[in-house]
Image (cartoon, rainbow, N blue to C red; front, side, top):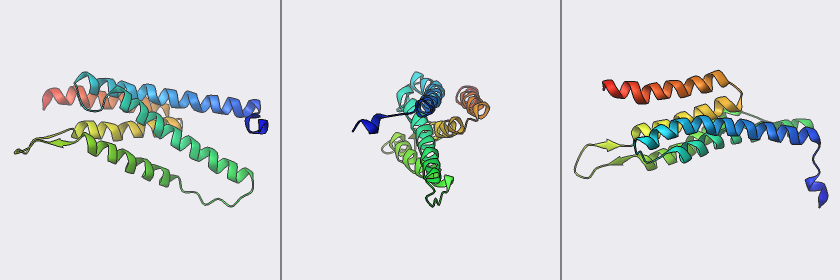
Length: 153
């Protein structure tokens, strides 16, 4: 039983690094979520943080799994796009829950929040593969769209 909890210092270092990536992703997702919460939208800071972190974690775990199978000389048939497909399917379900149409009208609400949920998945994916400039740039671009574009339209 104790063998299950016997980690090498390298394994612990790796896991701490993965936690740091997830935390960074959650922080960036939280910035967009804070903006959505500030304007009283259905998905706020916690939702955006958890979604960004989940995206990062799922990608990182899939990378670790592939690496473990390859290290054990087991045949691995891997396609990294499949992880993205699963994430997009899941976030689409969440995004659909934020979209509402008023009875008797054509007014649809929540589309921007649904799009921001999908966008934080991109940020989480960028962090997972350590594309920090893309992730931070994505946050800046999202805030520009949510603030600047909103003032003109």
